[in-house]
Image (tube, each protein chain N blue to C red):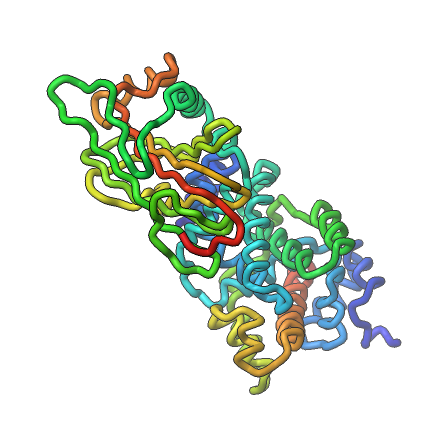
Length: 265
Length: 190
C-alpha cells in the first residue's frame, strides 16, 4: 500500500495518538474527503483514537442538536431518576434543611396522621385570630402505557406508575412532601412552597412526580404544610431545634398500595 | 439558559442541589434519549432505562467533572455506553463499564473555531444535504433533522429492518466523525 492510499486502522490511530506530524498532516488532508474505508473504521465501537478522546461526544453533541427540536418537560422521567438516586433526604437536603427534614420525620414518627387519604389533619394549635390552613391533596398517576388516570382512595398501582400530586391550599404555605411505608423510616421527598388555590405540586418549574419503582405494598404520601409569612422563620427554627412540626402545620395524606400486575388505579 | 447559567447550574447540581439536577435533566433528557434511540435494538422501555441510568450515573459522578463545559459531551458519552450495554449481553455490559471508566473525559480541551457546536451542527446538516436521494438520506433526515422518530419507528415507517436503520445511522455518524476528526487534525497542522 502506498503512502497516498493509507486509511485509518489500528496502526495509524496509534500514530495519531503519538501526534506523529506526518500522520497528522496526511490524515488531516485525507479525511477531509469522504472515505468509506476510514468511515468503516470510525464506525467500529473501539475505533476512537486515544489521541482524540471525545470525538464521539463531539459528534453526538452535533447530531442531537441538528434538529433544533425543543425538548418537552419530562416529569415522569425525572421522578424516576430522583427515585433511583435513592434516599433523597440524604442526597439532596443538606445543612439546615436536612436538619429540618430529619426533625419533621421524627415528629411524623411520634405523631402519625390519623386522617384518611386526601384528608387534612386539623392543626393542633393556631395563631390567635387567624383561620386554619386548609389543605387538600389529590393525585393522578401516569401508567406504564403512558395514560394518566385519577387516583382514588387506597388505589392499587403498579410499581411502574408515577404519581403526580395536586393540592389545594387556602393560603401560601411552606410544605414538605413525605413518603411513609411500613418498616422503613419516613422519607422526605422534597420541600415545596404552596400558593393559595388549587395547583400541581411542583419542584420549581417541574412537576413533582413520585415514582413507585421498587415499592411494594402500602405507601402513604403526606403533604405537611404550615403558613408562610412572619411565622416562617420561627417555624423552621422550631422544627430544627425542637424536632416538632410547627403547631399550625396541616397534613394531607394519600394512601396507596403498590402491587405488580395492577394496571389500573 | 446562558453558558454561565448552565455552568452555575452544573456546579449546584454537583453539590447535590435537587432543583439544579432537575433543570439539567429537563435540559438534556432529549439529547440523551436521542442517543439511546439511535439503536434500533432498544425498545421504548429500554430507551427510558438508558436515559435514567445515564442521569443517575452522571449525577453521582458529577463532582468528578473538572469543567462545566465538558458536561454535555460527558453526559452523552455515558448515554452512548449505557445504550450500547443494554443492547448487548452480560459480558459486553461488563466491558462497557470498564470502557466507560477509562474513557470518560472530565476535562474540556480547547476546541478550534472550526468545531464550535454551531459549526458542527452545520457539518451535520451539510452532510445530510449532500447525501444522494434515497433511503440512506431519508433515514438520516428523519432521525437527525426531524428528530422525533426512534430508529425502530423509522424502520417501521420505511418498511426496513431495525438493524438496517441502525446500520445506516451508524454509517452516517461515522461520516460526521470523519469530518470532525479531519478538522481536529487540520487545526493541529495549522
